[in-house]
Amino acid sequence: MTVIRVHTAGFCMGVGLALHKLEQEIETRKHTAAKGRLVMLGPIIHNPQVLSAYAAQGVIQADTLDEIHAGDTVIIRAHGIPRPDEEKLRELGALIVDATCPKVKKAQLAIADATAGGTPLYLFGEEYHPEVRGLISYAAGTCKVFGNLAELQRIDLQTGSRAVLAAQTTQDRAEFEAIRRWLEDRLDLTVLSTICDATRKRQQETQDVASQVQAMIVVGGRSSGNTRRLVDVARGCGIPVWHIETAEELSLPDIAAYDLIGITAGASTPHKLVDDVQNLLETLHQTNEKPSAH
Image 1 (cartoon, helix red, strand yellow):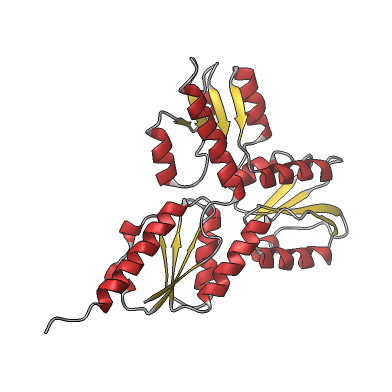
Image 2: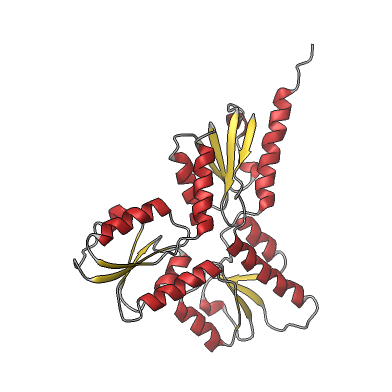
């Protein structure tokens, strides 16, 4: 068995920065008499193994603003939060550490600027994803959220009217371009380039590897949107694909049937989890190559 690992598999820059900020707060608390709790408002990233590790260090996850107390230090997740939620945190007397991915923050501010006069926003993304809920909170006008071109085509448009098009930072660029072309034929459109280059590169590398191998393993949290899109990209190459969170989930008898396997991972997947999968596959390869006893 030969294993090909996508070069970009594992943490992206935004995830790395967010976790660095959280770890700085944890370290600071070891040397100071911090009174309030250290709280992340929603999961800082979409990876259950990472979240469990931080919970073991005393980091609390609050899923609603009602769970925040005055004096808490609150980490804003990498996906960002809605604008009114941030204002409410300040009213509650929380100390805020903004760990929003810089690419997401740039998209938020670009949307605020482009829609400042009330221009409607068309947003390509997952309607209930936390990043999307944050992005649309920066829109000054009305907002339509859709998950693909087919969904967009079911929305009533006022032909010739002004509009702004943006996307969740982890969306598929090819689908975004098809959406842009369709809307430009119908609206006076301002297009914001909000898809992260790291996302585009990761998807392209996953497609390149998936086109070479017999099967693909995608490592990452099941709640991670960008990981699920990597699964879709790999499946688009017509090969078997396993979406797993840890190496323990691998079905070794099924995997052993293939001689050439690719590995990719979502932007919120720790490199160690990817390493574990690769090491297990390489161990399986060595075991299968052992000469039989005579």
